[in-house]
Length: 635
Image (cartoon, rainbow, N blue to C red; front, side):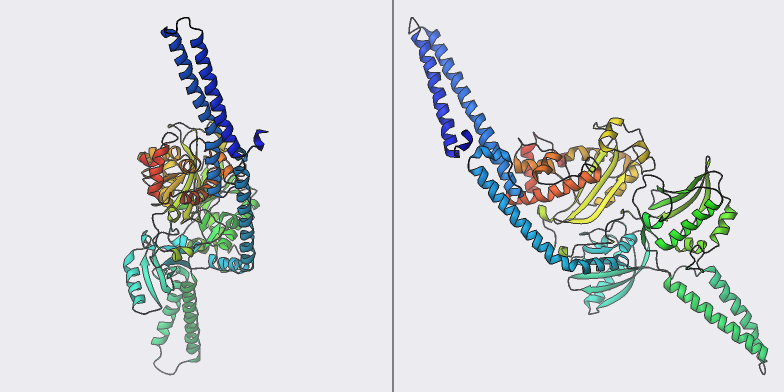
């Protein structure tokens, strides 16, 4: 019956109820006075006044509670739902016809948005094949490729470029990765009218690169190749050149008269050998390109793997490295051993690939003999030694208790393997320089999993996703962390991380330094940020990684949209925003990070509609919600 009343009648009923309560209170007060023998006695007057005072207070309080429960809170929820584009929940029924009207309007808008998204998807489907082909070509492009906008900020790069320039990220200045002298001179040549120019430059890590810089309509394209001309030529080729030259010179000294046929044939033979060897040397120097990138899955194809290996991206030729490892694995099997491949990340940009088995270690002379054999039948001129030399590494036998091991260091990139070998957002160039608006910020959304909830606990996993001006860039960071202590079973029951999983993981110093490099000066975004930022900041003295970045908390942003009385847990927030967290991803660092990133993007749009546009606006609003949660920027 009540639910059928309009909003106006419901409000009228509330005030009618208040009037009735006041009349009853007044009647009770008069009844007390009427029973008094002496009307001038102060006791009945005091009793009547107390009845009237407490009664009126209780009636007004009750009316306020009804208004707050059935009007103010539903209105806050309704406003938040409309601003975030979600359909209002069932609590809007207390608003009379306003609730169904808002529900219908939101549902109509959602249906229109879905139809628009479907139309966009249909229009983009015919271009997706060409886009995928282009991405595949650029991902496997041997050279590194980086494109910048007019302000010198990165809008595109491929996996090879990320290998040359660790920490490369969208919407960051390219100049931060290269010593700028040669780059500035090359840009001056372009401004003078040259369409493209070659240069040799140094990375900030001191690596020398051969580059070609080309002017683009909205910026610059830089092609990067490893500079090999300073490397010594292969020993066997130089030895062949020396031998041919040493044989040819005495023959030339004997040319005092007619050339005997045998001498002429010998000179001809040595000259041809010298020419062939020179051509071979030229081919080696020209084709000895830097190793491409390869995932652990590509390198270890066909090999038994140790359990729980993390994803990894190596700077390596997948075919060559896989052929070498498969050959070593087959030779060990022939000796009655059963090796498996393991991965041990180091702290210096490398990882150790380890073939390990139960049994005696392998003698080095036998390993040397195996490496002298070409492991790939399709490349009979490429021995195991030459494959290792091309990758700038080596392999050795190392005993470990009752186990034998073959250890091979290999360069590992800072980023884990991604779905695409290229990372880009060409719209960054079109949007120009970043402003102070929330929608234009470059952010890293992150989350941590820990051994517990107290200040004395430690991080066991950390993950981050980069957003650039309102879009996910595809750049990600994820690592397990060895806390240096046992993980309590109660914590493992929540996040699923065990002591065995973190046994070979980086320690806290290595993990947080790598994460600090990933974040740079970007704004950090987290759900319940004081908790996560507390772990990062307390570890600063130990790790040397200082996180003095600006911080946004999705708990506070949610309160700005829906008010403090609403539930602002991650589960409640994502449910209101229509974001689904797969059960297997909940309480994992990357799963919660992905959900927080999606929520943040929707909250920013809602805050903009409410007039909270800049980071400073959000900070000012955060002060109003200090009773709910602390502001991580004031820590």
